[in-house]
Amino acid sequence: MAIASRKEVAERAGVSEATVSRVLNGVGPMKEETRQRVLAVAEELGYTPSAIARSFAKSKSGNIGVVVPYLSKARIFSAYYFSEILSGIGSAVREVNNDLLLLFREPGKTMDYESIFRMQKVDGMIILGAKEEPGERDALRRLQEEGRPFILINQRFAGESFPEIDADHVAGSRSAVRHLLGRGYRRIAFLNGPSEYSNSQDRMMGYAQALYETGIELDEGLLFQGNFSRTSGISAAKAIAPLLGRIDAIFAANDRMAIGLQQGFRELGVTKDVIPAMAGYDDSDVAVLGMPPLTSVRVPFYELGLQAAAYVLKEIGGDLREGDSPQPFHHKLPTELVIRASSQKEEKR
Image 1 (cartoon, rainbow, N blue to C red):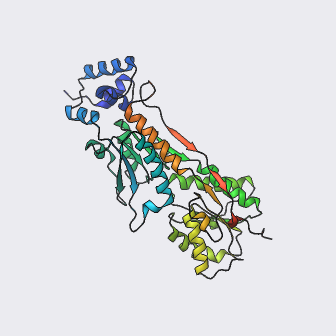
Image 2: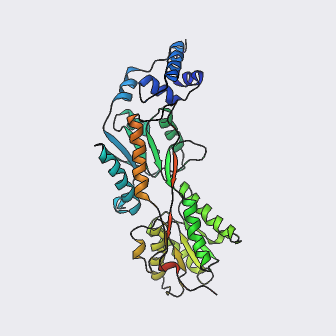
Image 3: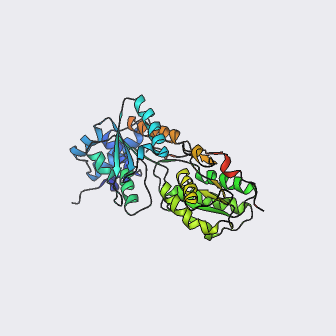
């Protein structure tokens, strides 16, 4: 006789696999009706989780894992994006006397998130740097199916219900481009980040929306791609330089690339009167150091970290609304345009 699987129990009971896991491992509050139904189906099918699995499910490490990308020769903790998010996470975790365990993802490799839980290294996980690449969806699906407490920051996967928190990058990008358009600029180049990140796709959507609303057709010859680093901004300056005099402004998907553009143009000997108006994104601490200071879109990174940690801690504590399974969590925080000198050039004629 074949041994029943958790999936079969879930289908027969009409609940998710995560709910089956929670019921059989005694994790979190649960409607008594749901609990009894799952237990009855499990008994009927002869499904019993192993003692080892039950032990893992109930034990606690006291650690919240934070997954960050490993960037060779990069000072990741001095980067505004990471330092602000980690600060927010740390503030929430410190309140409940938990510890943070930093986990670095290897470039080009899919991370086995589930094994980290199985080895009892963490009780919950906050994931930064996830992107659309082979294996990533499956790894996250396994976490969700196991009912593991986790959340994504600044990344979503179309068609999935993974818990995630982000800023409204469509609205943020749209506001920056509409500001440039409002200054009279019409040919606006866009330096975006890698397309496998959903926030790059969102910035692209905001850029396109702003042009469409103004009756301007999108010109693919004005689209460029970097990798969110200052170095990629310097490289992009060489690609954009031949267009100077024919473009009015440049919108960069983050401040580091915008600062790189400014530096790259200076290194190419481009004079101030030829450098186009410019806007960045993130409103990081380097924005005010631009030459001139950067107009930028402020993103509440600290709050993203704070709320992400609060969600995971709530999941770990079992402080959930009563129901068959944890409620989906998809939250976007507002952005704010901060206007500085870089976009205040005289209108092109």
